[in-house]
Image (cartoon, rainbow, N blue to C red; front, side, top):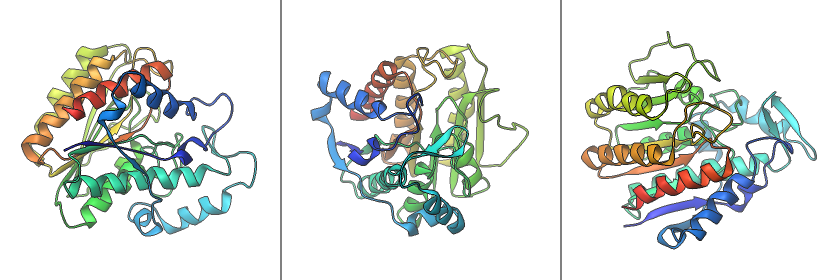
Length: 306
């Protein structure tokens, strides 16, 4: 079977201003690098459909969706928070980004592909049920997880999130959900300044202090994630794949490398092989140094392809 690579040209039309790090060039850097390194022909390419309102309503409030639609500008930019801006094409891009994860879930559950990578933007893991924040509008991975559960083909789904920022939106949507396990590693203290005193039985926090690098990252995964994942025995795994912990990324200070991203991808794939028939859906989140992002995604995909 193959690894699906799902994207859409609309995802390049969203922008949040000329100096904003979450820029269209992120997707171009990834796709150009995959072509240059010969990995692109090994992937099975799909064009993302638009998410439906019904699919969004599984994780977002109707009033929130209506408010986003009403605020979408006809020209220029409007800010929904200091870091998060919309242009006239933002919601079209966001609908394709969330739709990609729904498509990925269907492809993997049908056995059409073994796993999938959604090369999409805007990202999603900071978007809460009723709030856009942190560059995010729709919570893409949450939409895909809810769709997989609604399909009736899986009973238990795990989400692993190795973005350098904590996925507060995914946690807010799924905390205390008995069919979802969320394992999250992140730099702490750091945006969005998660309260680590919060506890839910299905949420595993693995905070890492700035500058500690690969050793601390690997220990957090092995000590915090793996026991929980083995106990939960997920039937499908979704990855919030943020590559902004890379040592070349100026937005954070975890000092990770491509090898770390390849390693954690292999760890997740091993868990999926043991519990979930190898079923993995990966969704792009952060990563803002273009060269480091492209190399890290390549390392991630090389593992998914094996």
